[in-house]
Image (cartoon, rainbow, N blue to C red; front, side, top):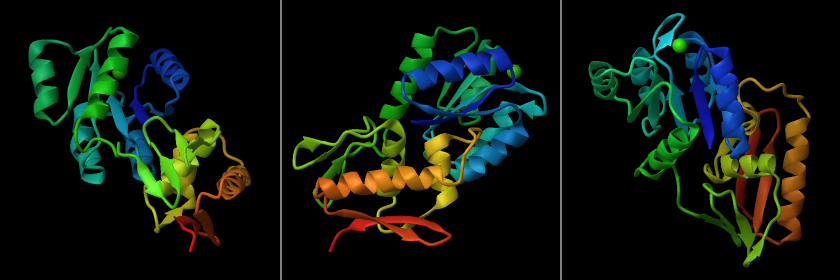
Amino acid sequence: MHILLIEDETELATTLRAALQRVRHVVDVAGTLALAREAAQCGLHDIVLLDRTLPDGDGLSLIAPLRARNPGVPIIVLSALGQLPDRVAGLDEGADDYLAKPFALEELFARIRAAGRRPGALQVETISIGRLLFDPVSGEASVNGQRLDLPRREIRVLASLARRLGRTVLRESIEMAVYGFDDCIHSNTLDSHISRLRRKLADADAGVEIHAIRGVGYLMRETR
Ligand code: CA
Protein backbone atom coordinates (compact mmCIF):
# COMPACT_ATOMS: atom_id res chain seq x y z
CA MET A 1 0.00 0.00 0.00
CA HIS A 2 0.98 3.59 -0.48
CA ILE A 3 0.89 5.25 2.92
CA LEU A 4 1.01 8.92 3.85
CA LEU A 5 2.58 9.29 7.29
CA ILE A 6 2.13 12.71 8.85
CA GLU A 7 4.48 12.89 11.83
CA ASP A 8 6.84 15.62 12.98
CA GLU A 9 8.92 13.58 15.44
CA THR A 10 11.81 12.58 13.24
CA GLU A 11 12.85 9.54 15.21
CA LEU A 12 9.35 8.08 15.33
CA ALA A 13 8.76 8.90 11.67
CA THR A 14 11.98 7.14 10.68
CA THR A 15 11.18 4.06 12.78
CA LEU A 16 7.64 3.81 11.45
CA ARG A 17 8.71 4.32 7.88
CA ALA A 18 11.35 1.60 8.11
CA ALA A 19 8.89 -0.81 9.75
CA LEU A 20 6.22 -0.17 7.11
CA GLN A 21 8.71 -0.49 4.28
CA ARG A 22 9.79 -3.87 5.63
CA VAL A 23 6.27 -5.09 5.05
CA ARG A 24 6.36 -3.77 1.47
CA HIS A 25 4.50 -0.48 1.87
CA VAL A 26 5.59 2.69 0.10
CA VAL A 27 5.68 5.50 2.65
CA ASP A 28 5.62 9.27 2.21
CA VAL A 29 6.49 11.22 5.33
CA ALA A 30 5.30 14.78 5.92
CA GLY A 31 6.31 16.64 9.08
CA THR A 32 3.89 19.56 8.84
CA LEU A 33 0.30 20.17 7.76
CA ALA A 34 1.59 22.21 4.83
CA LEU A 35 3.82 19.39 3.55
CA ALA A 36 1.03 16.88 4.13
CA ARG A 37 -1.33 18.92 1.96
CA GLU A 38 1.29 19.04 -0.76
CA ALA A 39 1.92 15.29 -0.57
CA ALA A 40 -1.82 14.56 -0.63
CA GLN A 41 -2.23 16.66 -3.76
CA CYS A 42 0.13 14.61 -5.86
CA GLY A 43 -0.29 11.22 -4.28
CA LEU A 44 -2.96 8.59 -4.45
CA HIS A 45 -2.57 7.25 -0.94
CA ASP A 46 -4.25 4.07 0.21
CA ILE A 47 -4.12 5.05 3.84
CA VAL A 48 -3.19 8.09 5.97
CA LEU A 49 -1.53 7.93 9.40
CA LEU A 50 -2.06 11.27 11.09
CA ASP A 51 -0.33 12.80 14.10
CA ARG A 52 -2.18 15.62 15.91
CA THR A 53 0.35 17.95 17.50
CA LEU A 54 2.16 19.27 14.45
CA PRO A 55 4.26 22.46 14.25
CA ASP A 56 1.60 24.27 12.20
CA GLY A 57 -1.57 23.03 13.85
CA ASP A 58 -3.79 20.13 14.88
CA GLY A 59 -3.69 17.19 12.49
CA LEU A 60 -7.45 16.82 12.82
CA SER A 61 -7.88 19.96 10.70
CA LEU A 62 -6.46 18.00 7.80
CA ILE A 63 -9.13 15.31 7.78
CA ALA A 64 -11.77 17.28 5.86
CA PRO A 65 -9.40 18.39 3.05
CA LEU A 66 -7.96 14.86 2.80
CA ARG A 67 -11.43 13.41 2.43
CA ALA A 68 -12.40 16.04 -0.14
CA ARG A 69 -9.46 14.96 -2.26
CA ASN A 70 -9.65 11.22 -1.69
CA PRO A 71 -13.08 10.32 -0.19
CA GLY A 72 -12.49 6.63 0.52
CA VAL A 73 -9.05 6.91 2.08
CA PRO A 74 -8.85 5.41 5.58
CA ILE A 75 -7.38 7.82 8.13
CA ILE A 76 -5.85 6.56 11.37
CA VAL A 77 -4.91 9.15 13.98
CA LEU A 78 -1.74 8.38 15.95
CA SER A 79 -1.52 10.74 18.87
CA ALA A 80 -0.15 11.25 22.36
CA LEU A 81 -3.50 12.94 23.05
CA GLY A 82 -5.09 9.70 24.10
CA GLN A 83 -7.79 10.67 26.60
CA LEU A 84 -11.38 9.79 25.93
CA PRO A 85 -12.41 13.33 24.81
CA ASP A 86 -9.40 13.43 22.42
CA ARG A 87 -10.32 10.11 20.87
CA VAL A 88 -13.96 11.09 20.55
CA ALA A 89 -12.94 14.39 18.91
CA GLY A 90 -10.80 12.52 16.39
CA LEU A 91 -13.51 10.07 15.45
CA ASP A 92 -16.14 12.82 15.28
CA GLU A 93 -13.86 14.79 12.99
CA GLY A 94 -13.99 11.86 10.57
CA ALA A 95 -11.01 9.67 11.44
CA ASP A 96 -11.63 5.94 10.93
CA ASP A 97 -9.51 4.94 13.87
CA TYR A 98 -7.53 6.48 16.73
CA LEU A 99 -4.46 4.95 18.24
CA ALA A 100 -2.95 6.52 21.37
CA LYS A 101 0.83 6.83 21.60
CA PRO A 102 2.82 4.94 22.60
CA PHE A 103 1.54 1.94 20.70
CA ALA A 104 2.94 -1.42 19.65
CA LEU A 105 3.85 -1.79 15.98
CA GLU A 106 1.84 -5.02 15.82
CA GLU A 107 -1.27 -3.11 16.81
CA LEU A 108 -0.67 -0.42 14.19
CA PHE A 109 -0.18 -3.11 11.53
CA ALA A 110 -3.40 -4.85 12.61
CA ARG A 111 -5.32 -1.58 12.43
CA ILE A 112 -3.91 -0.85 8.98
CA ARG A 113 -5.06 -4.30 7.84
CA ALA A 114 -8.49 -3.69 9.37
CA ALA A 115 -8.79 -0.31 7.66
CA GLY A 116 -7.87 -1.96 4.35
CA ARG A 117 -10.70 -4.48 4.73
CA ARG A 118 -13.38 -1.80 5.04
CA PRO A 119 -15.63 -1.54 2.00
CA GLY A 120 -14.66 1.29 -0.31
CA ALA A 121 -11.29 1.72 1.37
CA LEU A 122 -9.22 0.20 -1.36
CA GLN A 123 -9.70 -1.45 -4.66
CA VAL A 124 -9.26 -4.98 -3.45
CA GLU A 125 -10.74 -6.99 -6.26
CA THR A 126 -8.50 -8.79 -8.66
CA ILE A 127 -8.13 -6.84 -11.88
CA SER A 128 -8.44 -8.75 -15.13
CA ILE A 129 -6.98 -7.26 -18.30
CA GLY A 130 -6.51 -9.39 -21.40
CA ARG A 131 -5.08 -12.64 -20.00
CA LEU A 132 -3.51 -10.86 -17.04
CA LEU A 133 -4.89 -11.27 -13.53
CA PHE A 134 -3.57 -8.79 -11.00
CA ASP A 135 -4.30 -8.62 -7.28
CA PRO A 136 -3.60 -5.02 -6.22
CA VAL A 137 -3.41 -5.91 -2.53
CA SER A 138 -0.93 -8.79 -2.64
CA GLY A 139 0.74 -7.48 -5.80
CA GLU A 140 0.56 -10.90 -7.43
CA ALA A 141 0.24 -10.97 -11.18
CA SER A 142 -0.33 -14.00 -13.37
CA VAL A 143 -1.03 -14.85 -16.98
CA ASN A 144 -2.85 -18.10 -17.73
CA GLY A 145 -2.08 -19.31 -14.22
CA GLN A 146 1.64 -18.62 -14.57
CA ARG A 147 2.87 -16.20 -11.96
CA LEU A 148 4.89 -13.24 -13.23
CA ASP A 149 8.05 -12.48 -11.32
CA LEU A 150 7.83 -8.74 -10.69
CA PRO A 151 9.95 -6.71 -8.30
CA ARG A 152 8.22 -4.24 -5.99
CA ARG A 153 8.62 -1.19 -8.20
CA GLU A 154 7.25 -2.92 -11.28
CA ILE A 155 4.28 -4.02 -9.18
CA ARG A 156 3.71 -0.37 -8.24
CA VAL A 157 3.82 0.68 -11.89
CA LEU A 158 1.40 -2.09 -12.80
CA ALA A 159 -0.99 -1.16 -9.97
CA SER A 160 -0.90 2.48 -10.89
CA LEU A 161 -1.76 1.78 -14.55
CA ALA A 162 -4.13 -1.14 -14.07
CA ARG A 163 -6.32 0.75 -11.61
CA ARG A 164 -6.91 3.37 -14.30
CA LEU A 165 -7.20 1.07 -17.27
CA GLY A 166 -7.67 2.84 -20.60
CA ARG A 167 -6.92 6.23 -19.12
CA THR A 168 -3.74 8.25 -19.34
CA VAL A 169 -1.87 8.23 -16.04
CA LEU A 170 0.45 11.18 -15.53
CA ARG A 171 4.10 10.38 -15.27
CA GLU A 172 4.32 12.26 -11.95
CA SER A 173 1.46 10.22 -10.57
CA ILE A 174 3.19 6.93 -11.46
CA GLU A 175 6.43 8.21 -9.98
CA MET A 176 4.61 9.09 -6.76
CA ALA A 177 3.16 5.60 -6.60
CA VAL A 178 6.51 3.97 -7.26
CA TYR A 179 8.93 6.04 -5.24
CA GLY A 180 6.90 7.99 -2.73
CA PHE A 181 6.97 11.70 -2.17
CA ASP A 182 10.47 12.18 -0.83
CA ASP A 183 12.62 9.68 -2.62
CA CYS A 184 15.15 10.96 -5.07
CA ILE A 185 14.07 10.18 -8.60
CA HIS A 186 16.17 10.08 -11.71
CA SER A 187 14.02 10.91 -14.66
CA ASN A 188 14.97 7.86 -16.70
CA THR A 189 14.42 5.31 -13.91
CA LEU A 190 10.68 5.12 -14.40
CA ASP A 191 11.18 4.43 -18.10
CA SER A 192 13.40 1.47 -17.32
CA HIS A 193 10.79 -0.01 -14.93
CA ILE A 194 8.16 0.47 -17.60
CA SER A 195 10.23 -1.12 -20.33
CA ARG A 196 11.01 -4.18 -18.19
CA LEU A 197 7.37 -4.54 -17.23
CA ARG A 198 6.32 -4.15 -20.85
CA ARG A 199 8.75 -6.87 -21.92
CA LYS A 200 7.54 -9.28 -19.23
CA LEU A 201 3.92 -8.72 -20.23
CA ALA A 202 4.80 -9.29 -23.88
CA ASP A 203 6.89 -12.40 -23.14
CA ALA A 204 4.00 -13.87 -21.15
CA ASP A 205 1.61 -12.99 -23.98
CA ALA A 206 -0.61 -11.21 -21.46
CA GLY A 207 -2.68 -9.36 -24.05
CA VAL A 208 -1.88 -6.08 -22.32
CA GLU A 209 0.09 -3.15 -23.62
CA ILE A 210 1.54 -0.03 -22.07
CA HIS A 211 1.25 2.87 -24.40
CA ALA A 212 3.46 5.96 -23.91
CA ILE A 213 1.81 9.34 -24.25
CA ARG A 214 4.80 11.47 -25.08
CA GLY A 215 5.59 14.11 -22.48
CA VAL A 216 2.49 13.24 -20.43
CA GLY A 217 2.46 9.72 -19.11
CA TYR A 218 1.36 6.19 -19.88
CA LEU A 219 -1.81 4.30 -20.56
CA MET A 220 -2.56 0.60 -20.15
CA ARG A 221 -4.98 -1.20 -22.42
CA GLU A 222 -5.81 -4.60 -23.81
CA THR A 223 -3.99 -5.53 -26.96
CA ARG A 224 -6.30 -5.61 -29.90
CA1 CA B 1 3.74 15.52 17.05
